[in-house]
Image (tube, one colour):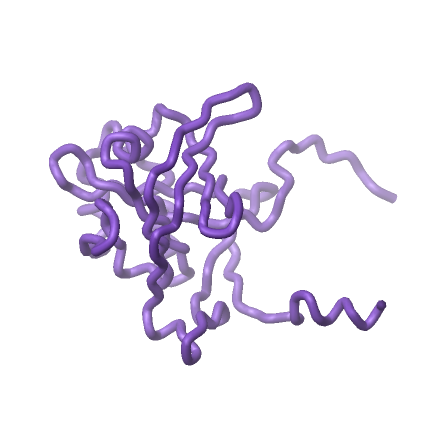
Length: 187
């Protein structure tokens, strides 16, 4: 038997994305955004309102980075989601993490997170069914510790996912199959 659970945030897992920009004074701003995904190859969409300091920075700088949060930095990633840059301008400094300037876009790369997409702002959409920052991924970097040859080994990333049912984070580490291959057994 199935039960109605009356939740609207029912997609699991949701990625835990660290969106980083520069503030007007050049300091680093980071926010935690679980509402983001690939729009199409090389394009990302983040469902963010214009009230976020990060969105204001993105529109001004025309660039940002998106890092995949990992289990080793779950506390810092959560901190970036519970503290607003609108009223805590030095929140990145308080995190103890480090950043370097991207060589490709006007945005910081948080070096502590193992994967980072460097993004060029395309447009902001605000409509009846939501709002979003749309960008083109210009470059992706990965820490060598999560690489297996020339490819990212997601089991080494220890990415975290957000569970909207319980407001918890879960570590994504185990490979369970081969996409676009294992299902062929039923063909």
